[in-house]
Length: 191
Image 1 (tube, rainbow, N blue to C red):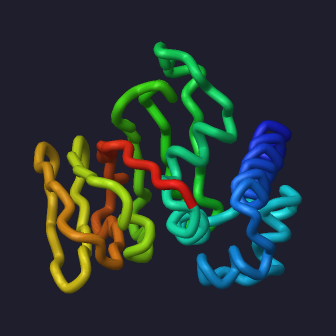
Image 2: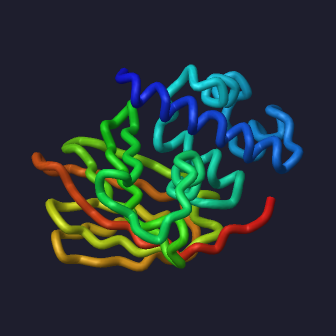
């Protein structure tokens, strides 16, 4: 892992801890709300473990906001202009899923660019979607998106507005990386 990645993991861990403590939650309470072990949360908070997309989805679902919001808060951005060189990029250590937070922290919506490697699968619980409206737009490749009991196959140029909160999975069943945009309407809730 690079020094930059180590620093970001520490920053992300400190943000998770600040969000937990700001709500007055113990490790046990966050563990129960997120369905993540206390030991894993402790490792994340100390920057000793690089969290997966699924783990971040569970934690953010418990906090009531998106992964992008957590990453933006960890980066502490407050600018109206978001230059590509300054946009936070997070890579899931388990799948290689790359997530770039494109929109400025002050924007009324979040715009996220994702690259999903061939064969990768990233799943999120319904709780990660309970507080937001979301749309997907595939720019390259093909994406299989499982939304509860429904499977959507999206090709380059296709867009989908997500329905009511459901367990979801993003799959790239093709031989090439899939690139897509996620648009999130901000609707953070207090916890």
